[in-house]
Length: 69
Image 1 (cartoon, rainbow, N blue to C red):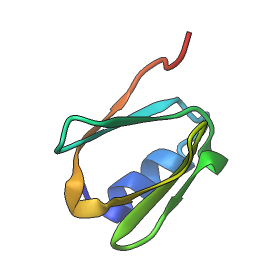
Image 2 (image 1 turned 60 degrees about the horizontal axis):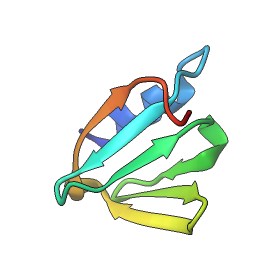
Image 3 (image 1 turned 90 degrees about the vertical axis):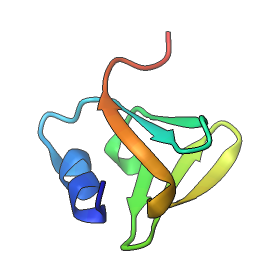
Image 4 (image 1 turned 90 degrees about the horizontal axis):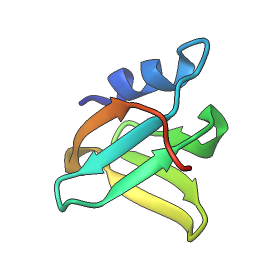
């Protein structure tokens, strides 16, 4: 997954919620495109725990799916 691939998912209209899966097994839910900031080397996601920083090289894959409940 490249930063450009992730930016495309954030810009897609209509936006569909994403789940970012990390190589260590952690995952982040992105319910709104304003919840994340994509940089060339890093993704920052706002969560209920605060800001989560993730190096792009640690993203295993991203799925488009309903999140939360």
